[in-house]
Length: 432
Image 1 (tube, rainbow, N blue to C red):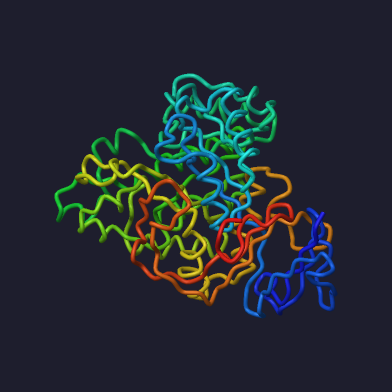
Image 2: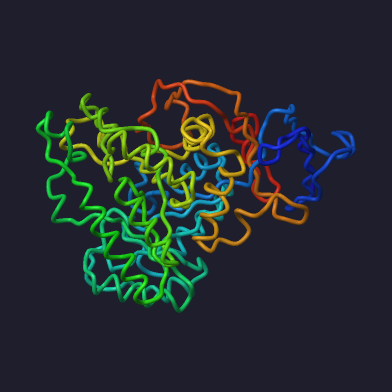
């Protein structure tokens, strides 16, 4: 197999070093590696400024296949992931049919294998059809070729406490985790945006923070009671941060994620009535955004997850009330994290590697990803140019959908190259 020499890259943001890849693994890190094109070694220049990180891992991606291929497919979604620096994504279960059986999760897993752009780890549904009434085939999905370890009804909340308790008890048998979409449905009926000053001024039905926080409070107590793992999807309020912080202080096995858009955008943007800003959970206040950034920096929030939610043009280019909720995020996530966390001094690049690679891989029990950058480790890598600045243009996205909230916004950083087990999936910012 071919060798690749990444020359002069700042490993985890440190001093420039050379990294030699031989086949699927890192063969060495240091200086003085010899060889070039004539010796069968492909040289990739880090130019002394580019940052080398472990390949990113997303715990929360909607690939839409099977059933909504007009929005995204496993192929287009994994291409977008590679452009964004991801070498593994967890594909959520709200497909058509729902990924609530071993057959469907294996289908998604095999489509990921065929795409070759990044690994696809299916997320299994907690309940049959996401209906919240009967547990899905959790054991069968765990034992399938896909080896499912994360289960979620994301898009819907497992609001029945008894069902949630049973799910938490069940997944203990195979070290699984239930990832909860924390939304008390009766508190959010007809809700259009965050409940607060802006919703009152606009006359839109508000989505109160307590709808999220009440479910989190219940579920961290349930997880502690049964001794199981619970993961909180797309945490969005300052109150939710405090609940997770309290649970961790108790030593309970609770983890949480935050999306890039909740680290940057606020409900003030809804004043435009542009449906691109309509998302679940809704954009919150500036105070919430600052609390989320602080919690990600201090480790209360474990990781960044994109909640990449592609929609076709007709589902977003309509009046606010009728528009679908969701934003694409795979291709812009790292830039938003650099803008909100690195450039503000809240995280260094080693911290980014921890929050966007190592921790999500551990939560998802995903072997071979999120590993240290060291000799003998899998060569799942991303080379980032942090000095780059560019205006987001969704016309150039690899994703099938274009519903980004960042169109026309200048963001820092660009993925220069992505390597999946030593093979370049992206080079010079383009798919190979």
